[in-house]
Image (cartoon, rainbow, N blue to C red; front, side):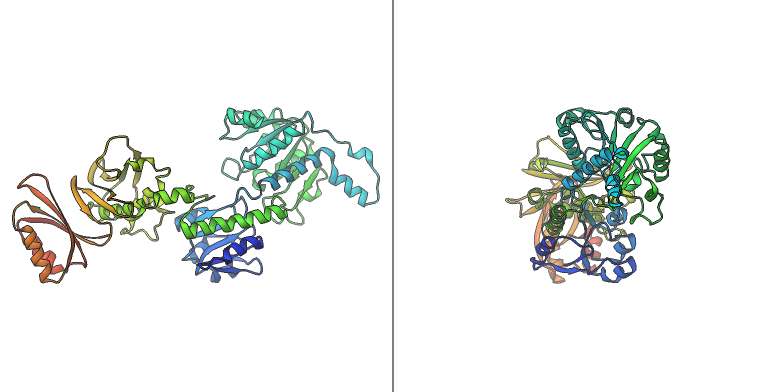
Length: 532
């Protein structure tokens, strides 16, 4: 598996990948443009980037073998997430690697704003001694508004408390109890922060809701002379509105480490603002952070490629190694159920209902099993390149809704996975599976509401027949005539002398002549060949 390191990361992270014989690690000597990178990614299994390399839709389309993109850092703005998901590529980041580093830079900015350290230094270097120009303020007793209480926001809040500041925190997912545990005052909305904060620091991702959220309207709600720090994403602040607020002294000062366009253009008006502190995106630029991020990105990529473990993915639910081992036996069972139903169900399905019963309802994460069922169901469709990353989106794209339930109802088997296919509210078909003896022996044990015993791999011949003597002999003779061997047989019936369901597991696919002869028999109907 080929892994391309597109941007510089810690040598320790590179070494972790290089020591695995399964990986071919290619370290690019410099950052490449999209045009330069396109011919190199055709056979890449993984790409490792920081913020410099852009993993665009074109890059993803060209990388036909790509399975994962690892971002050594938090933000994934430089990776096309939609294109990644559609092409079945997992995108992973390293949110823990630069938490402390970015929090410390944020506090450096707060202190620099409070005491005007960069401006004072500049005058000293110029040979001046202007103490009166640089009277500052203390942080103690001031109110810090923290917008975004993830890892970094939480660490900033802790440091602010140690400096004697009052912390008012806002986050759409923050609860009052968690705010209290951090030692912060809970703000129900942004306005509650704007009204009281002397300093405001931003720690949110760029979304439709947060893009340019700090604008003229927001500044108007803030206290006169507020000071603002942004070490998150440049797009969160409206640049023109901030300049206007600085020039009117509504905002007394701002410290920015991130910008809407990076590198910051040489003629950008920010550079002419005396009450602005600017740094060139140094949030993760410490030896410790780079080492942590490099090691972590190597670990998450190796874990996913070698064991299926999913950590820090932005487009796939979390799945640690222990949980993966628990759900792993269910994956071939789920995929076989999906494949079987896809080949037997009439067209027009619009809903898949999956029930987990018995020990299966104790699984800590059923999502991978559901994805395996969907992947099996869609494997014969016209959809291209469906895998466990994009399979839910693929199902939705053709109008199929997916419902899952952990059932407390008693079941016959220790483990139970049951899949029902519906169209316009009517059930078309269903099948259920379990394990015989051990998780290494999955079986499909329910089909068309009848008991069966079907292996989850191989070629199956399914048919309905009259429950009468001679059918089994007829099948054996006919298949032997065409040199098709029967590996196993499952027989079921609704009533004595009624309609039976026969499922034969074959060593090879039966020729068309066998199917034609069976369909001519008045006692046999619904002849199907299924490949699992």
